[in-house]
Image: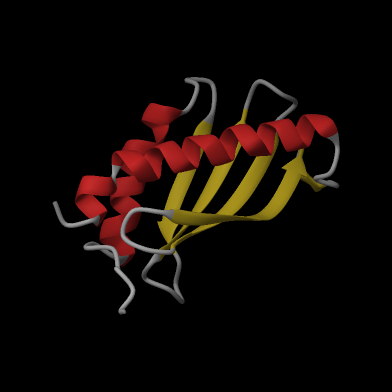
Length: 115
């Protein structure tokens, strides 16, 4: 069985994510999305949680098939300093951001699955 690849890839995929992701986030938070330069089925996401001492999170979101993404945490910073991601508050923020990412992937399902 061949893997069910996303119907759109690379920059087109990143653009769709950049348009959709803010709809699933609080207005106070911000996200930057770009295509992964090594994998056209992966988007990179930089999320800024303005309400909590300027936490920022970097995620790698790779399509495992045309509808579902695997989300990997790449980096966590607070006030531009790398921090340990294991504290309760940071884990809670990560879980919230990952939920927003999965909601975005679901919203784009028709586009990535090819209709």
